[in-house]
Length: 306
Image (cartoon, rainbow, N blue to C red):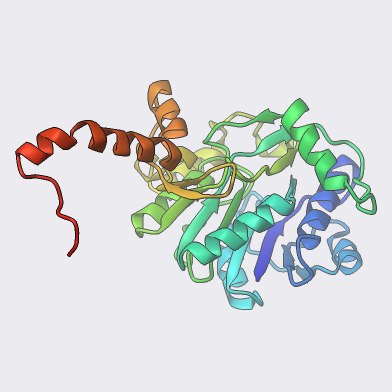
């Protein structure tokens, strides 16, 4: 099964609303799901007790006060009940499509990294999880009123235990560490799967704490630039479109034909979108048909088995 791990902001005001929404949505994916919450933030212990989460108060911190990701990834790998782990930012709601995607990818191969583009969505109230169609409502809100971020914004990482044990002391809440995660998987020849076509991660919009010098969309604050240096510079950054494979809306997993370090030109994006098995197989059979006479003359046709 699956263990989530994350860290949170203090549980007060709007932050409490969206963090409770996110954590509860993960727990409801399956009765066997485990959720580990790192940190001693305000009311974290109380929320963990209420929702049935594992509270790990201790976390190593940067001198700025930000939590260090390397500690959380190493410790989660040690204490998690399950072999598959998912680090997810504590403002991301996940629904049944994510669980089905997880089942598909773990049956696909042993080592992988699953990521997906998020949908920025205004959610200001607690979700009524007793309402039978709550997930349908959240998904519809995201797809109709939300905004899908580009491939550089990555908020969830699903992988098998044992990856990322040599992470630099990157810090959460600032830029570049997420792009390093994809580079690291690719550098170890781990398949990176873009689940965007199948999974709708709902990011509940929020404000950033000005005390840490970052605003939304800003990657030039001091702590983000520190992450960039610790990651090894821009040569060690990738994004979701750098993935080796992608999921279709039906959940099929296919090889990505074109991958780029930076932005993928629109013509290649469209080719990746439409050049699927259902398209190229009929074209291949058509090409075989029209070239059959020539191949017969040249003796290139395969013989029927005796």
